[in-house]
Amino acid sequence: MFFELIAVFAAGMAGAGLALLLGHMTGGRIPRWMVPVGAGAAMIATAIANEYGWYPRQAGNLPDGVEIVQEVESRAIWRPWTFAFPFVERFVAVDTQTVQSHAAHPQQRLASVYFFGRWAPTDRAAVLADCTEGRRALLGPGAQFTEDGAVNGVTWVKAPPEDPILRAICNGASS
Image 1 (cartoon, rainbow, N blue to C red):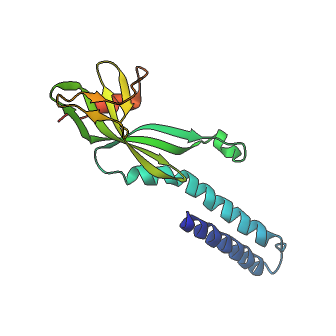
Image 2 (cartoon, rainbow, N blue to C red; image 1 turned 135 degrees about the horizontal axis):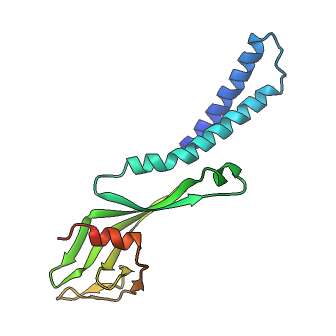
Image 3 (tube, one colour; image 1 turned 30 degrees about the vertical axis):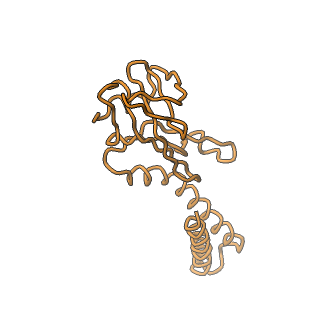
């Protein structure tokens, strides 16, 4: 966030400098108020570019085996252009290479799920999916595995038929 702020200020200085240079080159035919307008326009353009560039940058940095399963687009009244061109503000990714199952319960699979947000730290959660029953559960501190691989202390949630997290875990590799 700090570097983006520096980039916006630098763009403002460049926009103001460009307006000053243009005014000098035209012999003063450009009004003086164009300097702050140039600075403001450059700052807004840089901020917009940062908003739209965040998701492709993050997605491109994901390692092999981490599959993006859900994107959340942002539209806001204070950014009216987002109604025509929304940008991805948050997304969920499943590490399909961490998918594990127990030999006694092959229909239940465990995987790491990551939650990315534009201005939020990345969160990781262990998610247990029951591929036969179409349900999933977050593994919290109260979760316990028994000797036969059964899980106690979790709250199962019935997932919709096309749940992207459940689909990614159930189609992922099983060990």
